[in-house]
Length: 240
Image (tube, rainbow, N blue to C red; front, side):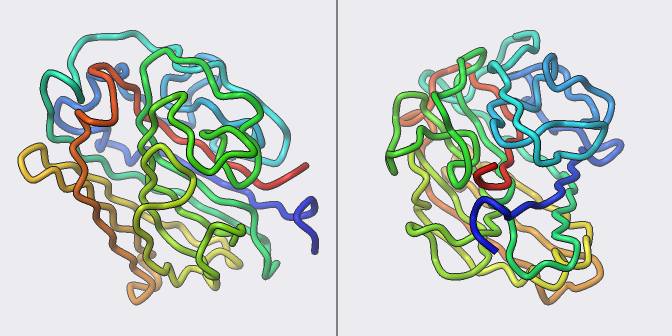
């Protein structure tokens, strides 16, 4: 199966009763479940050029979000001050039994109401420009759940933290192959401590606790992001 034929179905939703916690949500807008929103007016879904949002499924048709459309209700992440934030969400990446997967899903922070970078398809998760590994044009911090090994990736399914680059600063192997083939539901936690500057992530399948993968990176977000940012999801299935 070549890169153009790869495809995942990706379902993503905030846990009911578990919106972006604390003050982090103020950097974007009032959180809402992903399965109730139009992608063209959803502050949580943006920058995805290789997927389309249909109900609660991200399928393999091309759709390009035009940045965040939510209301800025104040608050800040970088520059003048830092906040703690924590979020939990669930998602399904389903290859329908195929052993080669699409590119995956990323949770990201980037400037509020910024426009998408040009042609950010495939392995760039709809976040970084094609043809460049490091891209500070639109400051972006992302936690990637990477299900396809590109030339800059480790040779296995993994979790990574990216800072202005599609090349992860840190990675951890994610034993998710069997669950992806079966369409299992994963739960992820992402949090940031403004005192220790610890950005951490954990992903696990309830049906297979041994597959859990955890990762962290010490990063001062004031050095990377502007004061106001949006938080959201982006996903891609490879070249179409």
